[in-house]
Image (cartoon, rainbow, N blue to C red; front, side):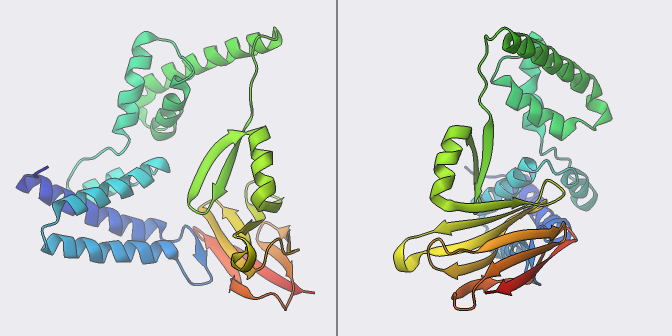
Length: 279
């Protein structure tokens, strides 16, 4: 696909502004000691973009722009649209597809199962936007009617529901039913500990086999998930505890060969310190 001069200029300007926005507002999503993987990534992408601009690589620029906007859309980021307008003059709406997707639902005035996900996306993106309040109220009303009908069917024994679990491994995440989740978790999850705040989580996990086996500790905070400690070996008896919302304990052994070991991790300024106790 060939891009016009105006399209090339727009994509270039919006991408550079988006990367600067990410550096300014999201490089602190997960910081291990003083290391921010996100900051390194954004700085690297700025260099790649500057080179692509010099080499007139329009496709690479558009592909990188689409990727970063997709990630921000996935996290329902509410700041990018205004930032782009203020710094480039361009008007964008990263949630536009969510609005397009719910228009047929609004027109038909009822919800089927596959509509719920589309409505949830729209409400998370536009729920606080005054100009969308009429559609927001209408969709909330349709959801309320659906929940009332589901409750009625449950009471009559005419509906079976399956609770879902969110599974996170590295950068991948997915949802599965309870039975499959517990079967899978036995293969890689040794233990989990939830923080007093009910949201943050520590988990001891395993990966690999034999000489490639690794036992590691993941921490889940509001900004993401990442490993804070890892040692060579399969199913090592490593224990984890929350002292409070900002302090954790990892019990391990000195003879274990650690691959990485951080003393603290922060997420958007919220600091969690890690204490190691060696048997």
